[in-house]
Length: 193
Image (tube, rainbow, N blue to C red; front, side, top):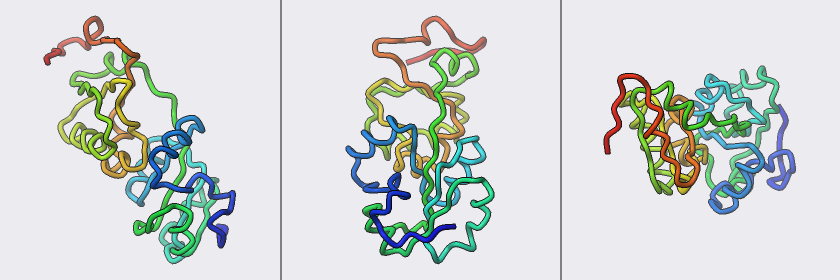
């Protein structure tokens, strides 16, 4: 574990300005990363096979997260003041993690393995999207298809509100104008509007 004393330290660049939605949406997907916040969410990401790039902890909670160092990703710790200056908010959950994104399945692949699918169009609020994924998991939805204008399910707020369920429910983003449910549905499934 490495102690960070400067909020501008390049080792924690992944965590800079986390409250700036426009900056984060331009930075995270192109760099193949996403941020998870809170112990439950980051442990669910690890169980779902996402590979950590690094962890950033409140230095007072080092003992609680000592096992994170076993995964090989760097573990950084900082005071609450440094965390707040770097991220732009009070990190009251005590732990953040930067993960590598996985390649998404295609819509056809999601449909082939699903009996119940939620199709979302223009859900561009990250909080609402996270709530939809949490509800989908609770209702036994097997897959989610997103229109191209939907928000990023791996944006920090979406991940947090979903309580990590975005890692459990398979999803795909549709190509503009594409409606794959018209021709490839799982046997025994029904498509209704």
